[in-house]
Length: 168
Image 1: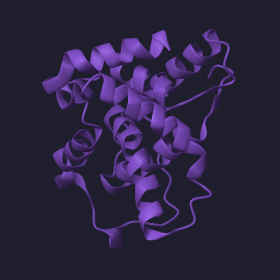
Image 2: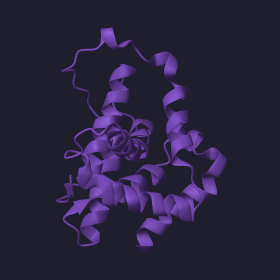
Image 3: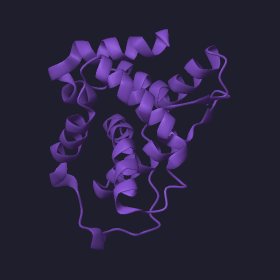
């Protein structure tokens, strides 16, 4: 991978993507990455409402704020997308009792490529780490069929949002 490090938001998105992939007994796919990106904000909100320790997630808040601003500018509903991504493959999910708490899951080749593209974009921008916006852009521009299907009702808005990341 390029020299760019993972931001706190990207680390959380990767973890959330892995959680969904484990439930589906799958490698981490591009749709899991998009689900993880859309879920970081919900994680922050849930920890805030429940009064839980936010130390692990709090560093991701500026990234989530920028992602929310981007989605608002383009009329994207990330909460609805997150639910759609989770529910679309719910039949693949296993029950919690079937999971090992230490189970690790690998990224698919397409997912590895998304991380590589995001890291290269950050490098080209002179940044030392890539954040949720770079990962979002790389995921949308990867043209994965499952991601395109999930975003098809707002295809132009997602494409414009991905291009908008380049402008910022």
